[in-house]
Amino acid sequence: MTGTAVPPGAAVQADRVLVRTRERVLAGPVSFSAASGATVGLRGPSGCGKSTLLRALVGLLPAGLTVEGTLHVLGRPLDDPGPLPQLRASAGLVGQSPVVFPGSILDNAMFGLRHVVRAPRATLRERAVAALEEAGLWAEVQDRLDSPADQLSVGQRQRLCLARALALDPQLLLLDEPTSALDADARDVVEASIAGLSRRRTVLLVSHDVDQVRRLCDEVVDL
Image 1 (cartoon, rainbow, N blue to C red):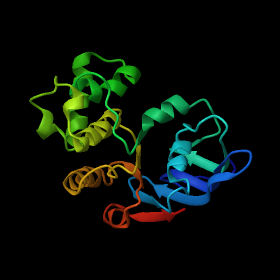
Image 2 (tube, rainbow, N blue to C red):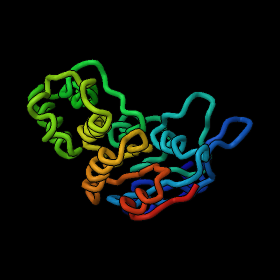
Image 3 (cartoon, helix red, strand yellow):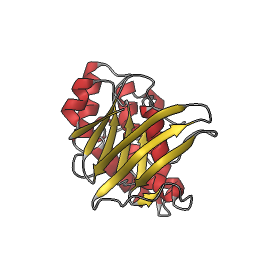
Image 4 (cartoon, rainbow, N blue to C red):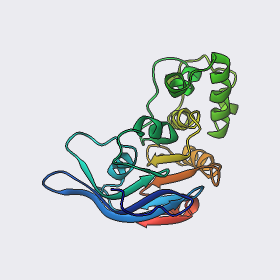
């Protein structure tokens, strides 16, 4: 998967990438380039492999699935197993169903940091607070950071998951149907948070919402 040169400034470069089992193709083949700082939408019918492709980008495919083609993520060929732990800290994946862990809102925001960054708790807290601000959640939780995270609304949980990924200061964010479980008001708030990431991070957005892709994305890749 390393034969194609990566364009300067490309956060993701895929050339005829497909994901398959031994019997059938689950996603692709697809070719696209995502420039650093761009928001790129991945669009296609249900079951075409959009979510599978996101997981392939960070090496999180289930056993038995393989990737073919040429794929570079943040300048690294994905068939080199060495950088995968580093890659997963630099490329955050946020799923469509917000998962909060037992514990407080602050503990959830710091969850990834505690496993990746060696620093005093005060430093981790500062980074978590900055991430909550970037995710558009800080104003709603600043006076209850020690409250259980499972008391948050679904929309707030989704932004907490976004903050958890942002706390690691990723160069690339992979968002898999981030508003599919939300009502219109919560969707608008999450969209505003995503729009605020523009130009600061590269975002790959999987969404079945054509209007959402139009609102948020600089370009669209059809699968």
